[in-house]
Length: 309
Image (cartoon, rainbow, N blue to C red; front, side):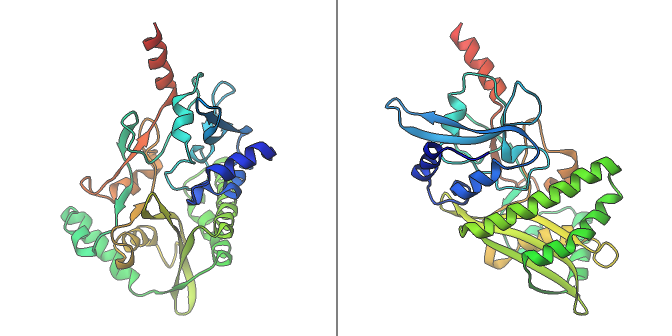
């Protein structure tokens, strides 16, 4: 789908300079392959001026729309909304479905999520159980044998077979095909993020004896006055770098250059964290976990109906 000239002008007018307000990235979302009827939901104030928008599409059924970045198999994305999206949600007259945003609005329910502020390693380790602390130290000791050098998107493409190898042990053939499609969508998305010029791709290439054995990619960008570090992926050779997924999380969370930033590892979603993402939540002790606004617009619509009686 291509936006109309009027919609494009609205995107430009509401562009606040943040990463996901980039008109180019909004249009990239509208090209996401796993949906039907992509479109922009627009919100207008009482003077008829646009004050918010939300890129949506149909995924679950023909009677609901979903924020594209919250769809299954969509690329990992920072838990943020496009400018004025909350205004769109509040004014919906139909029970559209949505989920996931960072918001301090009192109308939005807050749920713990796999996000935390970056902190020193020893401070993090002291918050873990003795058994988890021992396991993390063991993985970090193994990590120390690797050299870490800057990588590129080309290196991520080169690591794709490892991703498929790891997931081949966990999925059926049909599910594996979905995962491969997800990987290609993620690669396209990261290329678009880099092209936007609004973020830095922190790509760490892990090497052993001069050979790449794993790669991690985070997107660094500013949102509402704070640096965000969005951890998109860690792909690794399962025979030479097992455990790298967890070790790279700890390394990013405790990186001195990222202390105080919001490190985002996963979204809660309406109804709780996806079972396959629980390990991300479990890596962050309860007292470290940040919250994220979750708005189920079906429930919001029902409450509006009751209030109107």
